[in-house]
Length: 400
Ligand SMILES: Cc1cc2nc3c(=O)[nH]c(=O)nc-3n(C[C@H](O)[C@H](O)[C@H](O)COP(=O)(O)OP(=O)(O)OC[C@H]3O[C@@H](n4cnc5c(N)ncnc54)[C@H](O)[C@@H]3O)c2cc1C
Image 1 (spheres, rainbow, N blue to C red):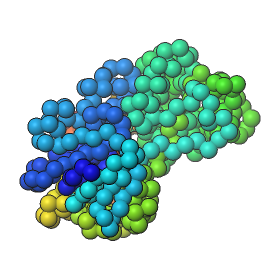
Image 2: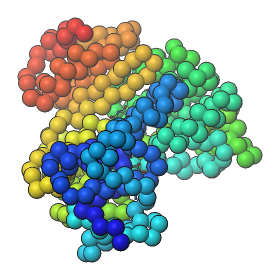
Image 3: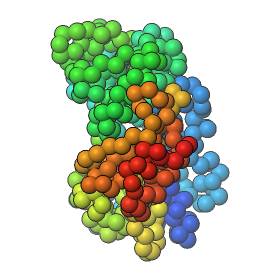
Image 4: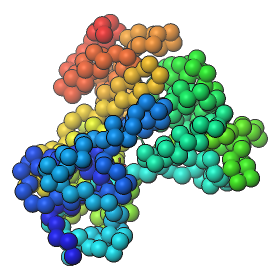
């Protein structure tokens, strides 16, 4: 039996940060970082961007190089954890081994939601969550002429932009009435719709996928209205589901993610969790939220590492995100939950740089900044500090 002290399950953004932070917090025992992707932890956001477009290698995506882990005495272990035995303080690996832990961290992330449609298991239908997924898409794209992307969220739109760069004809199918409906104001959706159409992407909204057809390979996507759209490859980007089965089977509280408190503790105070697999109560937003972003995975991991070392840090940072499409860098500060007003600096119906400020009862709560890095920095600060702002100041927001 291998003896270990700090065991981290999941070796991606949250797990890699947690391991590094444990050393910064002076954890002097062993650290075992268990992951099942057979790769040194790598950055996931470039998968739908530079990596898909063939502009970077997997080595370039490494979060930290392999020497870092050796130097910090962090053991990278390639295995899947099948079960947690909390009363014995053991995790069971799929290779039959067991590993003892004194402290355990769950950083199991999320997986792509599957398309529940007939034909979804045909060859040529892909998901985009891992480097291995992208390698398959890239290979298929070399002989494909047409790609249909199911889902007009960030991943779908980034994928559209990368596949256009590879020269494919691209159609995006979005079930709701506009792209990015869940996350942005209608004007911002309209902006991205326009940008993609200008780049030659066909966007179909209100498009409900009924079936994927083909013999053994996919040939077409059939919509609920009976229309058939030819497709050499189909990429499904309809959101993710958190990997919470291990936690649930171990009796931890799960509510759209492993429930954690402000110190990243699960319902078992000896076990922490961080990243896409975890949800927690945000006093500011008055609800429980599971964030899917690199900055929040990093912050939660730092807090979790402090907690494992008996120190007290709290999850407090403002959520923020980004998305790259074509020459556009979208940076989002805060969450626009329940906004009742938007103010624009710049004109999204015309410009390629603008900011959409979201207000609730006059307070700035979020901002979508397109090619406006200074607006983003300004918004992050104002939203974090809850500084009162004049509407006129937002309209003439800092020049970038
Ligand atoms: C294509 C794409 C583009 C994105 N773009 C952005 C972006 O622009 N900006 C942004 O902020 N975020 C972006 N995200 C989201 C971001 O990548 C995630 O928020 C981040 O990866 C979360 O990190 P994590 O470590 O919590 O989980 P994950 O990255 O999901 O990693 C979890 C790891 O745990 C492993 N694992 C799970 N269960 C087990 C087990 N039982 N045993 C062993 N290993 C296990 C998984 O295989 C995986 O390697 C993007 C995501 C994708 C897929």
